[in-house]
Length: 229
Figure: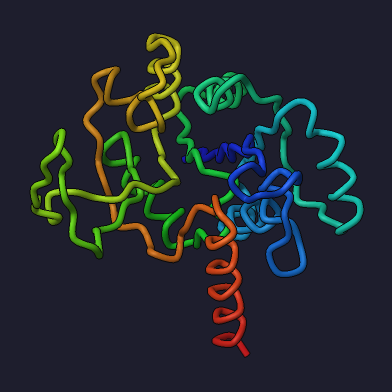
């Protein structure tokens, strides 16, 4: 099985209250994006890694790679106007229609090899594999001025990686036109007609969006280092 990873890292630092793009902010002693890339590189030396960055961020990434001595082999691709367009740009450089591709948020640096491996294995069986977790909190539906409780066991929180047969997801992105409600790859594939298969993710596989997320990720990282010592 030929395997690719597209790591989409087009975010800004607005919700992080920082001028630094969030993928370049430090987690531990190196930028968040380097943790993410390294997680996929550690999974398999044969995995082809594509990193999608805003065009204007390419030089900053090269400077950071030199500063931190980061030499992991990647292919850099220019991003698009939205995440949808950035993923499409990443998919367009994959020429093998029989391969499988894991699409992952650049600011989910705590993804682990178990999740990555499961995503490829389930995608090989079902055509798609979307990391997800159960809800811990109660959930309520808002309708005008009223709210009502819902059964949280009927809902899942969606993460990445979202892994697909390359041919299937490329066709979906070629046929489906961008719409704001298409917030992830599963929604694009589903609109194309693909049945979406969920598998168990990890509560630690968080997306770093706010300063609180960064503090949480730091705590998880330090705990992991403690467990390994």
